Image (tube, one colour):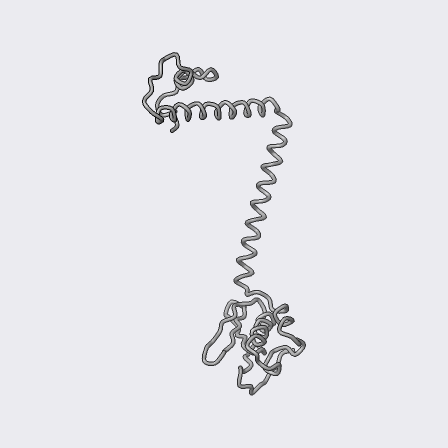
Length: 185
C-alpha cells in the first residue's frame, strides 16, 4: 500500500502515490532518488508499483530508514532487490534480443531439417557434392604445393612434371582449362 503523505526529509510523495516516482506522458513511470545534492535516475517502468519497488531497492542500498520507503513489507536489502524489476528500456532490449535469437534459431532448425530431408531423398547428390569438395581441396593443395615450390628457390619445372600438368590441364568434369583468374594464391 503506498504512502500518500509524508514530511520526510528524504523525498516527498508524488502524484503517483509513491516516493521517487513520476508519471511520464506515454503512460510509463520514471523512478529517481536523491543522495545528497545528486539526483540518481533509476529508469523507466511500466507501472508505478514497479518504479516504487526499484526506488526501495536503491533506498536500502543507500541506508535509508524503512519509514522513508514505499513498501513496509520488505525486511532486508536482498528482499528489496529481488522484488525490484529491471527498467522498462532494459526489458525491451532483452525482449528484442531474445526474439531475434529465437527467430534465428527457428531459421537454423528449418534449414537443418530441409538439409536432412534433401540428403535422405537425394543421396547421389550428397555423394557428388562430397566428391566435388574433396576434389577442390586436392586441387588447392596441389596449387599451394606448386607455389611453395616456386617460392622455395629457383627450379626448372618441365612440361612432364605432374605439378605442372595438374595445375594447367583441363578439368575432366567440365572440360575447361582454367585461365589466370581461376588460379588462387
